[in-house]
Image (cartoon, rainbow, N blue to C red; front, top):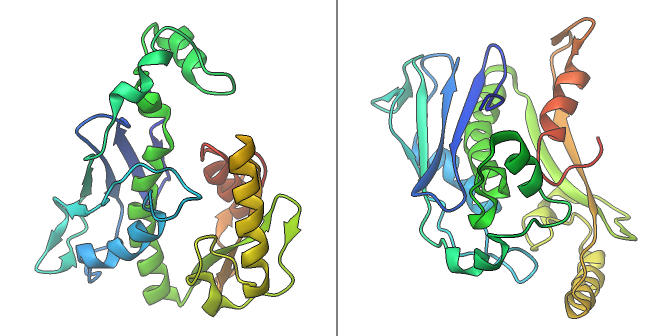
Length: 243
């Protein structure tokens, strides 16, 4: 199975399944000398962590990330950085009913036809659980870019269904379960999501990711423009349908 690595100079190879013992990734290409501890990664991991509100999956995972290699005495060595997160709340029995059938709009059927075998427990490799390691690896990249170039990368929810934010206050983003920058829209979003849940329905959303103080000249013409690389990475996330 190929397609598990992204990047050229800074590469990330992820591994693991939703209900396996652990998920992890190998980060290669991180320059030496970057001050790095597990605490530097945990803040972003906690923001992504499931079960933090009634509006997300109710799987309870601490998502405590461990650094296994590539760091010595608190600094990166320039060698591959191995990161691992243990899975502790797998409830495989919840997926028994789909062992013999395929879920619509999911990767179950495609995996079965491509490989002749699939791990139906939580979607296996195709589960959004895999994105946890993108967050961990991304935290390293984000820290390096900020310290080396002053590039600040952050994001917020700009629209939930028909509800659009009217203002952006970065201080509000971390203060609510929607990462919404408009405090006046949060109650409306809460009520909207509660109504959808009662109907057994779901809805799409839109997020804005902002990179500030980006040095000019990054990317390569023509097919490797920065926009093209960003679109490639973002479109590989399970739920993303447009960039």
